[in-house]
Amino acid sequence: MKKNIGWFDNRENAPGVLNSVLAKDVQALNGASTEGSAVVMESTFAMIVGLALGFSFHWKVSLVALGCVPFMILGGAINTKFQSGYSNIDEDAYREANLLAGDTILNYRTVASFGHDYLIVKEYDKMVEAPLQNSFKKSQCIGFWFGFSQFVQNAVFALLYWAGAKFQVDQGTQDGANIFIATFAMMFGSFAAGQANQYGPDMGKAKKAGSLIFSLIDLPSKINPVDIPDDSIPVTKDFKGEIEVRNVWFRYPTRKEEWVFKGLNLKIMPNESVAVVGESGCGKSTLVNLILRFYDPTEGEVLIDGVNIKKYNLRQLRQRMGYVM
Ligand SMILES: Nc1ncnc2c1ncn2[C@@H]1O[C@H](COP(=O)(O)OP(=O)(O)OP(=O)(O)O)[C@@H](O)[C@H]1O
Ligand SMILES: [Mg+2]
Image (cartoon, rainbow, N blue to C red; front, side, top):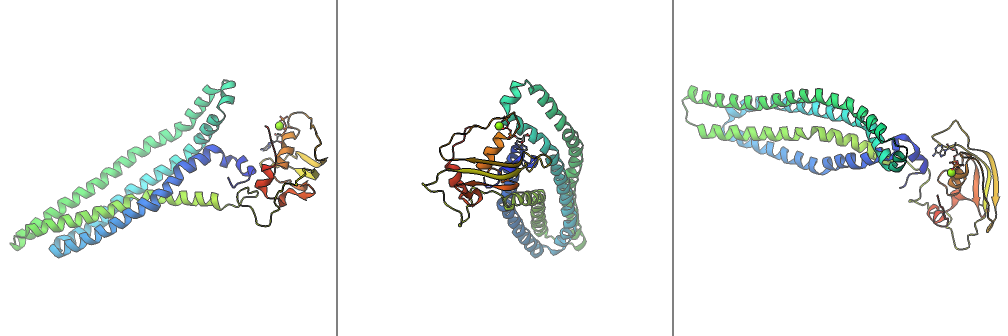
């Protein structure tokens, strides 16, 4: 709401894209800042307690388990790496498709009146075809590495049981209970570390989402109807409404190669009715856009009651005007 209208004209800020930012990226950031940090904290403590229990009950088995932790973390890391790579590719691939879907739904009546529904469905199908193929290949890869990380977990269990049995046979001791406690304490500690790792892709996504969201929020708006500067002139009751367009040059920020106005001069007195007539695309709506300050002139100025409209309180100025599309 704080952005200027020209900003929304950019294709990368189209409603479909902004919608997807609000729906997906904001959620990703939220997930990492609340649930994500909770899980990281939970698993850190689980790991500390697991290590303490393991070493106090049977330090030898725990040492063997500790030696396996790098493999378990590696398994988890490979797994997360593939998953995060997977989501990145999809996001970019779907961006174009989201844009098309968003624009179509917003302008559904126009699309329907031209009978272009089937063309858009075809185009959409084409846009999601590449990500589909990609996902298929990727999913097999992810399946393999997920299986691998499960294998590592089971292999570690097998190794610990084997090592525990060997310690007993070699030393002729009967401390099976301690070995079990140590084995399980260490395994649950490692699981917890793996779990923190599982949040890896979310953290990566959240970082990407965060930088995207904050770059949108922090980008200064050229015309801002929400944050009104303190030194702006209030539009009071004795506002007369004398409009003057003085030597205005204007071109749209997204269409720099074409001037709409080349030195336009126009004065409209209060209570005067003026009709602006011209062929389609000659700049009638653009004139209204400038008076409402949807855009600022590239050169020259628009004055109301002899004051440049940039100096007025923008919200009050727009509230004082009626506009029928
Ligand atoms: N948001 C925009 N971004 C880029 N170019 C634009 C934008 N809006 C209008 N234009 C271009 O500016 C020129 C003037 O358009 P404008 O809408 O002011 O014409 P108009 O006189 O109101 O036409 P119509 O009678 O069809 O409403 C046209 O060439 C148009 O394509
Ligand atoms: Mg128009």
